[in-house]
Amino acid sequence: MSNKRIPVIAGNWKMYKTIPEAIALVQELSSAVAGATGREIVICPPFTALAAVKPALAGTNIKLGAQNLNWDPQGAFTGEISAPMLKDVGCDYVIIGHSERRQYFAETDENVNRKLKAALAADLIPIVCVGESLSEREAGITSSVVSRQVKLGLAGLAPDEAKTIIIAYEPIWAIGTGRTATAEDANAMCAFIRLTVTGMFGTPVADAMRIQYGGSVKPDNVDELMSTSDIDGALVGGASLKAADFARIVNFTAK
Ligand code: PGA
Image (cartoon, rainbow, N blue to C red; front, side, top):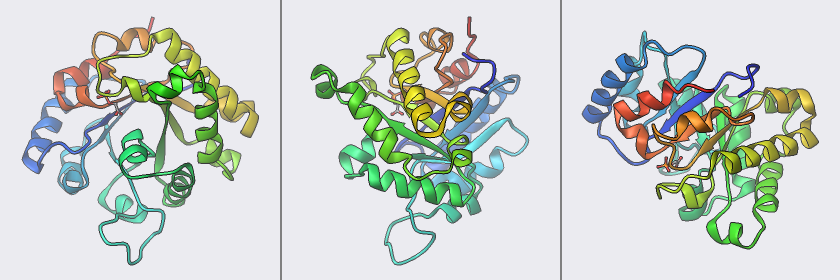
């Protein structure tokens, strides 16, 4: 892990937790990570819990994020939530283009790009997810799939904007399956993403950008993942729903 980049550990709660459950999890978590320094900690509860969780995070070192947003600031889009609304409720981060959104809600790279620009315009830090499916990996097209997602997803950004975003490399076959990419493979893909970013925006942007790994990150594999050169954090699903597990991940030690 480069000492130039501050690692980010983010919990993606997906469609879990009622408001009382969310508050209970935050209370347990906040004391367990109170001593963590030199890293950013983010939780992304469902939309319905954001307003209740925000005050529960006051005085803690945990930041609030959302799991999705619409690309327009307002309008007749039934069921959607905009970037200014997320800002209004106290979010600082937003996940964009998670593979579940791409897979089940037909999100395209073009949608991701519009959402990314909307997030930046509202001063939210986007966590842009990329990653290949099992069949794409088996077909040997992982690099071309991921570079396409990065190039189309980040198209048209100014270098200063690109510098602030976070990319999460999440191979789809590793999400929720208990199958993690090896630290070596995950690091190689994060390095490849950084190279793609270098080609688009230059070395200073690529050196500054945080690139996370996601996909079955657990207490027992986080230290190894975080000991690599190009993995700057983790996007954590299942293990972020248990305070002790997520706290252990937040409190990783990199060799
Ligand atoms: P997982 O999910 O940690 O449960 O594999 C990761 C994600 O979907 O972001």
